[in-house]
Length: 124
Image (cartoon, rainbow, N blue to C red):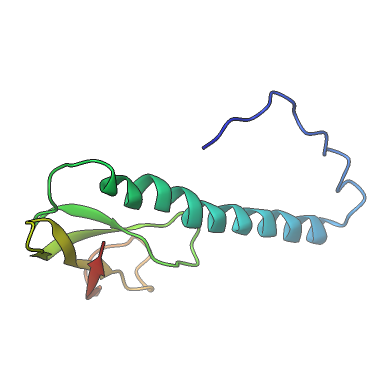
């Protein structure tokens, strides 16, 4: 989210002597590291903390939200719906219950039949 230089890194010859399996492992590790840092740094800064600096509309029952969990699938977020909210004395929403469905792993096209419904409580 910062600035970068216009210099292109010259790493085209770094892994040229490695076997394909080793190169594949390196690519997988770099990809996993990228998504881990993205989920830990960028999404927390861009999505969660901005609400503390701006006054906006309170979360309401029926709102669609992104559920951020530690998923083995990179960049995979689940859509959820706000089922209930709890407000503080200053009428700001401080926690909510979000419901979402986890599709059956045997269902290749992701239909909602046979999915498991989950409700989680999230605080801000």
